[in-house]
Amino acid sequence: MFSKLFGKKKKTTQDIAPDYVSLIYEATAEGFPIIADLLNEEMEFANSPHIEADSNLWFRYIVFAGNLLNLETFFSPEEADNLRQVFIPKITQSLGADPETADAILVDYMEFLRNLNKTQKNLVHSMAMAIFQKYELNDYQTEHFQKLNAPNPKVMKELTEIVALFLWNWKSYLETYKVVA
Image 1 (tube, rainbow, N blue to C red):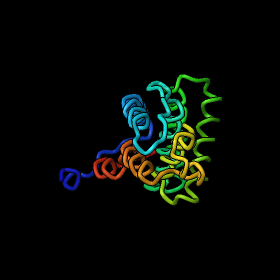
Image 2: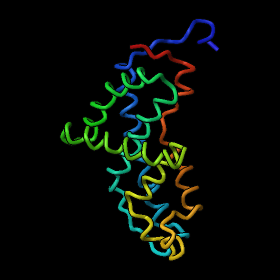
Image 3: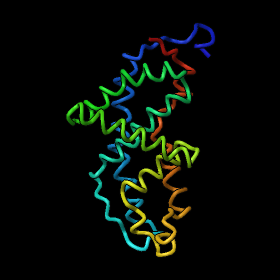
């Protein structure tokens, strides 16, 4: 309501970047053990994948890459590119890896998700599929789904619902703030 009366507060990409990166990083740190437990105890699997709660690096890359691709939903291509230019160095710094290597891996994950999204047509579902593939979950499915080389729809539904929670809520954010260069 106040934003309608007084206008939206302006935030630069430099202002947004630290919160964007740290909040997503914290969400992945706190959320992955829950996802690992869910997958380890998944009743639809023939065997438990025994995913370690701290084996979250692939998950972090998937979530960050998905969030970077999601910028295209809320911003023009130029604005999304400008945001990515500011966000990517901060993301790679947060991952604690060599910046050049982390940048390359993050770009690879973005391309991986883009390719998945061509068939999935839904970013969140593509992120869930990326998790399914990166953690080789097909190996733990029942024989029927292993032969199909396709995720059990029940597992994908659960995974998709959970992964959706890791996308930055730009809709709500943009109701309060105006993003400026």
